[in-house]
Image 1 (tube, rainbow, N blue to C red):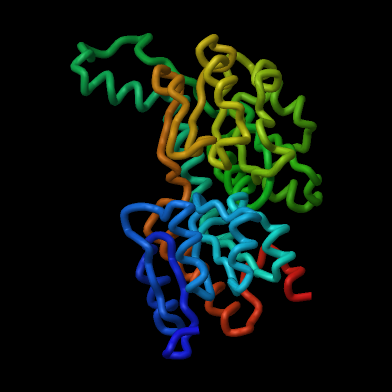
Image 2 (cartoon, one colour):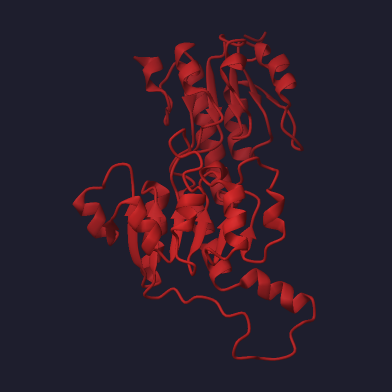
Length: 328
């Protein structure tokens, strides 16, 4: 505890002022940097001096690190995903972990559709074509893409974001299939015009596949060479979930061989590194993890992350708790 009797909080990267203002009112706040994340060594050196941590999704908080800072009273992750944190270790050490679900649903669904439209209608290729001075006039076979009306979109992972993607699909008059670990109730299926199928059927019959599932051991490289080979050669893969759900080397080969028509990727297995094979392909659209990148969403994420952290430090239950066992 600091000399002002306010808990000390470390924020590993500058977040919107909407969240920082909440933190400053209740805590002594240190923002590591607006330019970069702390290294593992820097984080280990800093954490013993703080009561709370507001982390980013690329801060790796594994068991060896957490065991060195068991006094830490809360970790508030500025993301909906939390695969960067060893939840079991945090729970055993009595450290509550929170995330920011709900507030980024629409933004992430929007980016999935932006990628879907960009790759199926070859928008990025068309932009480059014009900028490079190659366009000499209208042509009936110039950069032909795929029309979405009447096609089938397969949604893998029907949580908040998956359902938001499905909701948008209705506006494009698409058929919607989904695969989830647990089938949704009939009312939800009717509301979103969803048809439940097994994963193999979804992969074989979908014209577009949108990945919206959480990353864990079960989903690691779920879309491997075998599963990718079952996709239609005219189909597209969209990933706005986590990069490691897809075997990137296998996807590069599948795209090269035109085993599928294209892909749109917002996430990568070793961010910010991108598999070099993608950079050589014209049938993949790549964006730098922009899923939640709207002003409104980042503000709301900052507010929720800050409120979660402050509530935990004040002995209250956070709004969005990943490991409720610490309060049992």
